[in-house]
Image 1 (cartoon, helix red, strand yellow):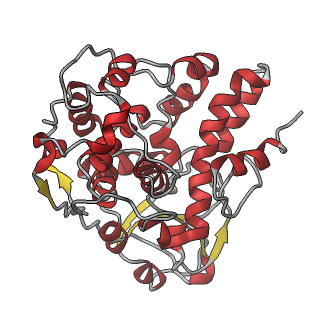
Image 2 (cartoon, rainbow, N blue to C red):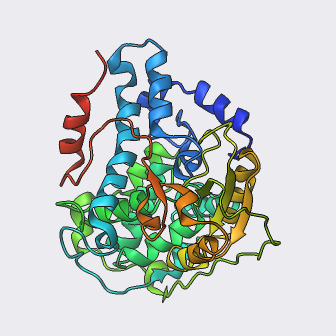
Length: 364
């Protein structure tokens, strides 16, 4: 079972162990050579630029590393879309999803009893580990949206809640891509496809059909019962922390746990966990524990469970520094840019329009 260490040296070792050639060849298979770096990228412990620079240092021909660089670029693409579109990514972005029979999530998915063994096993692993293979996420989204006919938003929130690598932009916009609201067609996968990539031999399921049959497929009984999903994040109030009002203060949050940020400087470091943020983007207790363990890599960090306004009562906003992110536009102080692989920003209607711009900046 995959685990995710939280010590920075172990995370760095995971970067060093990347095999971009095997990744390109096998990433879609359940046992493929994926990097398992997504939780650290999503939490801002490392950046896509950092991984990109490591790949360049391997001195491999471009075509050997291009697939992995392209997949990293998808993450930057989704983030740039979030920056440009803001709350619009919480709605059907390009097209209305059709058909939609419900605004909930199938209990067969929540209870991992869909009858598709590979999917049910993967959901069980998600609950245990906080991780799901990216190809399986597409399968699950297709079943939830295009077979069970649930609108994508509630199932996407359910998955985000459970993922250690939960990145709302990647998550929401990928679900929309599968559901056809952020793409020109829906994504489907039948049983043969799942068997091929997930070492399964299951037959006679509701997915054991030809692709031409999906458009007329009735909602299977295993997916018919639907429930609302109303998750909560429980934050433990921290002890009183000691802050000086007129000292430079770095503010970390759920999307920024960079241990090298202003390294070695004489500053105050605060991990701010805002209840309002987690009301909007709820995550599981496993995710909160993961974040607090990752924060141990940040020298001298103190954890504050409070709204940003409360922090400004303890520290002069003129002393506050934070990294740009769509979820902290209400922060006051000095905003610093995040690290990106390429200096390409703004909204692009397709990834490949974005990628075309990025490729022009590839070092020769």
